[in-house]
Length: 266
Image (cartoon, rainbow, N blue to C red; front, side):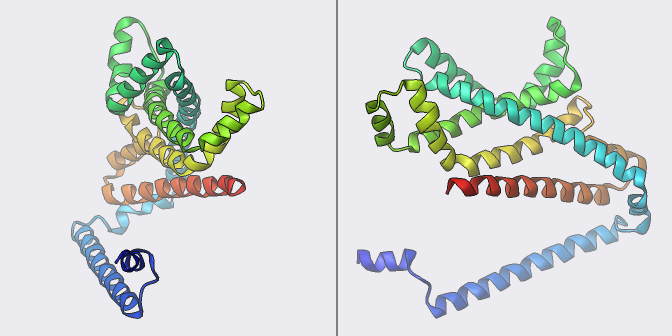
């Protein structure tokens, strides 16, 4: 019975199963096509696909304005990612520390930042900090909360990778007389990175998406500039469609870069 179950779960599908899967895939594609056609029809009926709502995309100034927003998005996302990766490592070291004085504050910080919405942290930087005399630029009002929120998640991703490294690696390094710091940074952490590349990429994609909260502090990122175009040309659907494509291209580039970085690790 166990062998039969294994064949069902992991064996190659039979010709009948492959035919069924092809039929289901074709059915799903047909349903999606019908839904897409319905959405396009509704846009057309509402007049959102009229040429007058698209003509301003032929102007270089429109793309320059969107380009400025995209640069703002990438500037904030890149800095937030750098801070999150570094701070996440610090939080990880604190959480793994044998000394409670270091471990418990790290655990508290990780759990607090993981449980607090990024938008709430942005409002704290935007509304609360100025009340106590701390004034940040709109860039840091957006970037700092994103980096803090992401750092907590990255710390847990790091920890999952570290725990996935076989204990024999650590014991072998210690038997060679290496210090705990040498064991971690030379043996354990480099191997842990092999396991967590996909999860780190997912977090980088989330960082890019979180920059859309820039509207709260009126930071000039891509979504904020898109809202300006919508307000001026009343082209809600065209602008959001173009912006969605731009976000997809950025995230696809991040995923592609991660695959190239991960090849030497396999």
